[in-house]
Image (cartoon, rainbow, N blue to C red; front, side, top):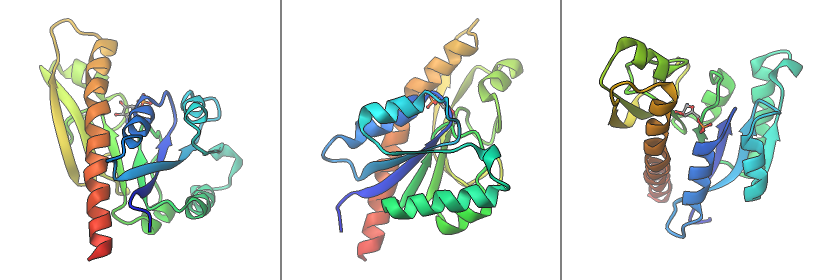
Amino acid sequence: MSNRLKIAVFASGNGSNFTSIVDFSSHSQSSFEVVLLICDRPQAKVINRAKQAGIPTFVFSPKQYESKEQFESEIVQKLHVAGVQFIALAGYMRLIGKTLLEEYKQRIVNIHPSLLPKFPGKDAVGQALQKGVSETGATVHYVDEGMDTGPIIAQQSVPIPPNSDRDDVQAIIQQVEHQLYPQVLHELCKKVMEGAKS
Ligand code: GRF
C-alpha cells in the first residue's frame, strides 16, 4: 500500500483552495496525494488549474442527469477507478447526497468561510458583514446531509477590519483557508492511514 492517502477534491469555481491542497501535497511529508478533481461546472476556472497541475478531472453537468443519485453513482465509479480513499470539498456548490455519503462514511470534509455554526450556507461573508460582527473565520468540518452542519474538525478566526467590503473579508479568510485546509487534511489522512494499519 502507498504511504499516502489518495484524495479527490470537489470544486465548482475558482479553485484557490484546490491549488493550495495540491501545492501542499507536493511536499514529501504530505500524507495525501490529489489524484482527481471532480467539478460540476464545465466553465470553472479550477479545471485549468487541475490541467496545469497534471491532475485528472471528471467534469460533468448535473442537468444532463435525471437525478443526483445518477450523477453521484457515476462519480463513485470514477472515484473507485482512481482509488480515492478520502474526499475534500473546496467550494463545491452542491449538497452531497446519500450515494456518496454512504460510500465515503466519515471520509468527506468541507471548508466553509465562517465560524460555524454561525453563517452556514451561501454568502457566509455577506451574512457576517450584514450582522456587523467584528470577527469571522474558516471552519473545516465533516460533511453530512445538511448544509454545513456536520461535526466541526478545526476553526480559525480572523478579525474584520472596519470598513471592509466583501472582497477584503473574502481575501483575509482565504489566506487562512489556504494554510488551514491542507494542514487539517494532512492530519486527517495520517489518522486514516494509522487506523488502517492497526
Ligand atoms: C472558499 O472560501 C470556501 O470556504 C468556500 O468556497 C470558497 C471556494 O474558493 N466553501 P476557491 O474556489 O477555493 O477559491
